[in-house]
Image 1: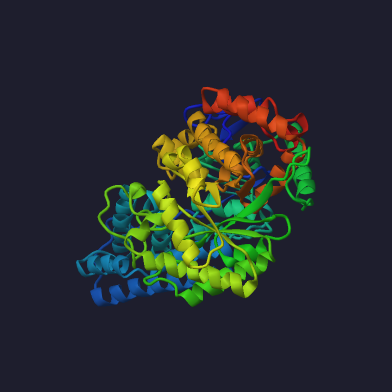
Image 2: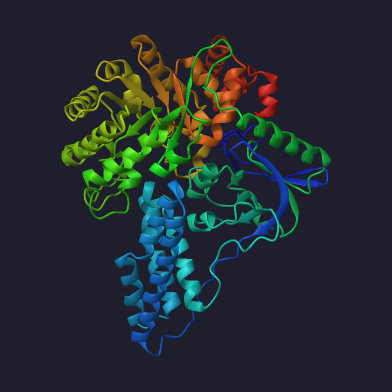
Amino acid sequence: MSTSTAAGDAATGHTPSTPDGARAVLHGFGVGRGAVVGPVARAHPAPRADPEAPAPDDADAAVVRVEEAFATVAAALQARADAAGGTIAEVLGATAMMAGDPELIGGARTRVRGGTAPELAVERAVDEFVTTFRSLGGYFAERVTDLVSVRDRVVARLLGLPEPGVPALAEPSVVVADDLSPADTAALELDKVLGIVIEQGGPTGHTAIIAGQLGIPCVVQVVGASALEVGEVVAVDAAAGTITRDPDDDVRARVATRAAGLARLAEATGPGVTSDGHPVALLANIGTAEDAERAGDGVEGVGLFRTEVLFLGRTTAPTEDEQAATYGRALAALGGRKVVVRTLDAGADKPLAFVTRSGEENPALGVRGYRLVRTAEDLLRTQLRAIGRAAAETEGDPWVMAPMVATVEEAARFAAIAREEGVGTVGVMVEVPSAALRARDLLGEVDFISIGTNDLAQYTMATDRLLGELADLLDPWQPAVLDLVAAAAAAGVEAGKPVGVCGESASDPAMALALVGLGVTSLSMSPSAVPGVRFALSRHDVARCQEIAAAARAARTAGDARAAALALVEEDVREVLALA
């Protein structure tokens, strides 16, 4: 995710659309570093029920129609999930489960029996859930797009209309929409999608995540995107977060140069290393065994295996055998390369039917991650045993870390449990300020730490990382966040133990240089971001990285910090990667 807003308003991350000669430039938040030029293709709008629709003549028959519509949508979504893989499959599978949710269907059924038209009953039932999810925030708020997708597909089926989404593309195009559901994004004709532009969404939403995984240039929260007309030509620059209408020859030339440069960088598959030979492991963030199998030779391993993907949306925990098989597939796919497995990061804002406590007033500060050990230690021990079995069966050597560790007591307890269950290399995540400030003590108990910059920024800035309108507060260049990263990295240097970063801030080449300057030893990100970071490292020595880090930390604002860092980045790196 590109968090650069140098061309935009420092407070909001957006710049009002401004004329550029005869052209207008729209601004948003970019995902990736790519740039493309192409005609606009718009997604079909979602159908809406007539609020004056009459009551059904036969309520029983209407209920059957509603149930069949939900079932058909659920089956179609699951079929797409089965045909996909990795994160896309997980997202679609979870959406399919929503379409089959008994409470959701029951709400529509009750309204139909009460005299509401079927399509209107579905809208009102789903909208009630949408309101609740938005008020809960966190993981629930993130699922609103999925709920709306289910609603629109079911309503379209009841009205006999085409499902909303992107139509068949006659030529390579830039897809523009108010928002895209995971199902819409997964159904895109990838050979014809040049880029994605959405007016809503957020930089950590599903569209952005999937676009990043697929390597599609994407810009979200684009004010004015609704004015883009079908067929008009636009230039999409994900690195800058801009959409230029009617691009001239200069803009087109810059896009072509960027595309060629990024293509050349992607051909390199060597290890991460600075110009003076200092190694920095470049790793991938994954969520499934399929992600590991697709990682390829461009990464040196996995720095974050999000194991909760295997748990989410289930009514019972996966068995030890099932978990061991999944972890074994991932370890085998990486062929002896480094794999860092994060134990279950769920509970509270990522609810699990079989363990999550209800009634928490603030889920983001609740029982999540490692804290589940307080009430469900067996869940953790089963997972650790499964990881150990997978390691033995594949002759792998996974590193295992716990999320949401806040104290040295928690670190010590996790390390003890992990070692009792046969894990050799044990670490913890640094995601809250207390862990960063006391990283020296944590490293006295574990073998390594990994900094999750997304959550660290959230808890440092007291800002929900899923609220797109507050994205400027979550900028990893915020000086307070940099100070905490520096404290954790310094503790690692002092202890002589590895310190990784697995938040997406590592995908920003300029930030990657600063992190290395602070003492970070590995960087984990979306695989598509690795070539740019590899190139940036190869053009700077450790001393320059340290200068970049010092300049950023000396700044007073996030914008100033990034500007100070970029002033020290080599010109060819800024040009090829469009760092501005």
